[in-house]
Each structure stands twice: as C-alpha cells, then as structure tokens.
Length: 516
Ligand code: SF4
Image: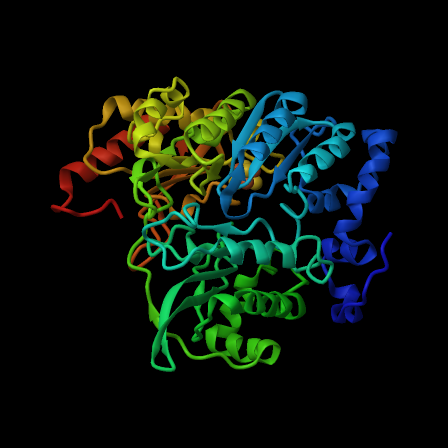
C-alpha cells in the first residue's frame, strides 16, 4: 500500500462519517492494486469494506449482489478515436454480455463483469489510453466538455487541450483522491452551454474581457452546482480566467473543497453545501488564498442553452465538413454497434467518435460529398440522426435492472412511454423527458421539461413502482429546476398521464411559449 499523507481533518476523525473513516484507513486508489489479487482469489475474498473503495477503480457492485459488477470508463470531453471505440466494443463483447450504456457525463458503462475480468479490462483500456479509475468515488470524475470542441462553429476556442491538461492533472493524483464527496468538472467554450454548466461542482463557461486594450477570450467560473435529492444551481464567481489559467484555478477550487468541504454528514458533503453556506463572495476570498487575485468578471458569452442535443447533420467550422449527431435510444447501445461505428468513423470521418451528455453520439469530420452514403448506412436506421421527437429527447438512468440504489425500473419504461407519445402526440417543439429510478439524479431529471423520479406507492395490492412527475426544468435564461406535481403516477399510467399533460400544454400555450 502506498504511503499516505496526513490530512488536517484527521484531527477530528471521531466526528467524521463512516466513509470518511474508511478513506483514512486506506485511500480509495489503493484498491486498484488489490483487484489483481482478488481476481485470483475470487469474489468471496473481497473484504466487505472494500466494496466502497472499488468505486475509485470505476466499479460498483451490480444488482443483485451476486458477484457481478458495473464499470464506468471516463471519456474526457467525450472524445474517442476508432481504436478506442473498437477496444470498448471488444470489452463489451468479451465480458459485458454485449451491452454498452452511454451516460449523462459522456462516459460509457459496462454491466455483468466479474472480478476476474477486471485486470484484463484495465490492461486493454490502458493500452488505448482509456481509464475507469476515479470514474466513480469521492474524487474528480470524468471531465465533461463540449462534444464539438475543435469543430464547433459556436465555440470561442478549442477546449480540447485544456481538458487534456485537466485530466493529466487530476487522474490518479493522490492529492485529490480523498475529496469529501464526488466532484464534477465541466469546461466548454460553446456559447449554448453545451455542458450544462450550472449543475457542476466546478464549471468554466465562455467569456471575454478587455485586457491591455485587447479583447481576451477566456472563461467565467461557476462553483457549487449539483443535482441529487437536493439540487443546487452553481454560482458564478467574480473572476475572469484565461485559457492557460484554467488548470491553476481548477486545482485551487479542488484544494479548497478538499480542505474545507464538509465530512461529517455524507448527505451534506458535496461542494454545493459549502458554497450555499459561504456564498460566492466568501468562496472567492478563500479561493484567492490558494491562487492569488484574479481580474474581475468580463462579459459573459453564453447566449442560450442547447440542452446537449446535436442530432442531425450540421456544418462544422471547417468549411466543407459536417458532423452527424446520432440518437442512442435511452443511451443503450452494444458491442456490435460500437464495432460498426468504429468502421464508419474510419470510412466516412476522421476516425473520431464523440459521446454527448444526452447519452447520444456524434460522428464528426464528414466531407459533404460523403454525407449521403453515411446517412444510407443501415446502422443509422436505429442510431438515427433524425429520431422521432420524443425518443430523440429522452434520457434514462440505469434503474433497477442493474443499480443497487434503484427503487424502480427506468430504461424499458421510458422506451414504452416515448414510443407511445411519438405515436399519439404531434407537437412542433421537442419535449425533453428524463427519468431517474430513485431520488439520486444520474438521469438528471431536475433539468428536464418533464422529469420522472422513481419511488414506491402503497396500494391495496401492495407496494408498486410509481413516479413523481416534475415539470419546467431548464438551464437557459432564468434557469430553474423543474417543479414536482402532487402525487405519484403508477408505472403503467405514466404514458397516458404524460400524454394528457402535453396535450394540455399544447392547447393552452401562448404563441412561442416553451414548455418551461
Ligand atoms: Fe441508480 Fe438512482 Fe442513479 Fe438511477 S438515479 S442509476 S436508480 S442511483
């Protein structure tokens, strides 16, 4: 086991929550080496307390707890090359019963893994510079970025080098492997807020400021956003950051969270609670003790919110080239589809595939003259660039099929609901539907036009799966989380209830009035 540094909160060890005490006993990252041993000695040999630490290796126990695991693989800014896509496909085929899920943080997830599979997966992922490490756990998770970085007509600068530098700085860095709770960073220079800045612990969004008589392009900084059962919108700090300063600021904010973040009550440990208590001004004052003073805020360049939807065919900033946004229904794809995607991006594009935080995919760099042939490929029938409106705007968490925290099923229900709505409702604008199988928020239901949160409901026939319906969430101007409606809807009534709700909106809306 690597030698561990002493942290200042160790003086109060008796007051720390149980997970904090486990982290003090052994750092989460130490579990990566242990896995090689357990792969030989078997599932039964894993000590109970190490199941918590497995998250630092990107692994959770799958439901039911019978020896199978889920693995999440980080994909910074959603950027993949075809070699990586093939390896992801091979691992799903060899170990994950062919399933690949795209997540709301641009990662991919496998299911059905056994502990003896994991070392080979680590090795094969590392060979193509992909990592499951710290994709889960109390550490900096996958860095979400503009999925169009470098090709985006609506970005001020290409953020790929910044995300790469952040990844190099944070990944497997033991200075940051024991944070109070999970920690999510986003970086984007897209003026339509492609990364949902307000729901991140730390976010960088496009801004400009006059410095020495010239307009400098850089970022504004947001801290303390997050969803889960108590969602908070991030607050903007009064500072302007140049591209080359992003890493310094991110390290400063992360050190501050590490040192001051709450560690007594686990449900109050996210950065959002510290920011809510301190306010943006005090937060900045303390941050300056880590990174020194920065210039005050410049001019915000966010001009709207695209909600992370890129389906269809769109011109890139490189003349004559297009990107094709593909819908992945409910974020679920397969080894077979990933193999084919790897071939398609080599054949039609530049060998690059991108994952999107709406659980979708993008094929970039397609020359205009190859578009028709790509669009005629059979795979694009299912992963369609032109999906029906409801299926094309649906997001679903993992749910009870694999998740130990779930109260309800999600992906199959969402599929039934959107197929029904696509048949029954005609509308001239898309309605975004998100579903979570519990009060956590992997499906980000609070930012949806219509969010569904799974729970249980007592009936004369016993407990059944039911959903709280919330309406009106968005991250555009006047960003707000959605508002829960009274009562819960049984699973088998969700589709007709949503139909009524949407038809009511259709009938009563003012011209141009959005759903939110
Ligand atoms: Fe599991 Fe709840 Fe997250 Fe869904 S939202 S994946 S049910 S923890």
